[in-house]
Amino acid sequence: MIDVTVETFNQDLFKEKVAIVTGGTSGIGNGVAKKLASLGAEVYAVGLGADKTDIPDGLNIKPVELDVTDEDGVRNFFSSLDKLDILFNGAGIGGSNERELATFEKVIKVHLTASFLFSELARPLLKESDIASIVNVSSMTAIFGAGSAPAYSSAK
Image (cartoon, rainbow, N blue to C red; front, side):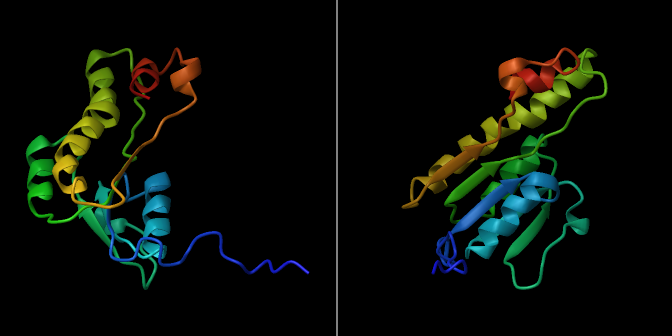
């Protein structure tokens, strides 16, 4: 008989590890934040709407209200950290008219520029980690493109 109660992951896999999840206040990022925390990590769920973030009892998730395109805010956030093991760049938006330059630039800034900034600022902390990891989220539009979403497709 097969025991179907066996967990796929070691429940303490990320015990005493620290993670940042951009876009962690909603959507896919929030799901990632919950999973990392359920595996023992202390998680900073970074994004907008932090006060409305769904955090189940017992999970070590700290919602951080931060616009990932605010360079000074991002730098200040990193200056408060003394440890980091995992960076999950999951912040994202879609523009209603990405053919307008301002919308195109905003989408690129959230998806691409913010991922670069977070990754660069994370490097000194990650150098000290025995499991240093950066995860960037992509999309099938990176392969197929989307005529109505040139910025999103390019950024992914």
